[in-house]
Image (cartoon, rainbow, N blue to C red):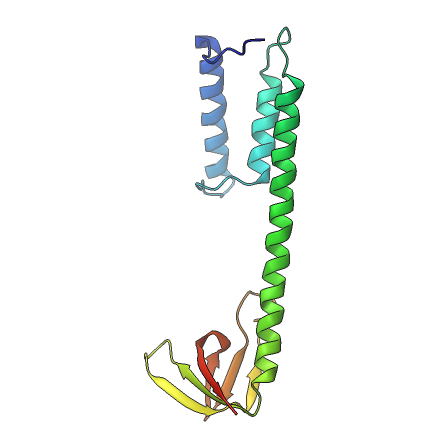
Length: 153
């Protein structure tokens, strides 16, 4: 079965109207358009595709299964990304605990200077929930765990 690769003038016009309508809703709802497609965008495209298919020539099973497999892959990648983010946060948490009482060198991101001291305190603040790294303190100053460049016993 041959699948037509060109759209008729009527189909092209319908698609253009729907795209313009969708773009206007992005601005109206306070959302900005981005170059990254998410799962909501994928589902909207699939729904528009299903709504505008020719009833005499519905999707082939292979196409639909392929699109559902892509959606499933997107869901799995999103889940894996969340899991990896959690693992990174837990790793930083464990690392910060292990630095207590140890001599560290940090590169101060604000001044570009290298500072050294014995870690006396760990501060989490809102870091555990806001993707911020835990902070270590020594000599009265606080530094991100990401700024540590050397650890000594």
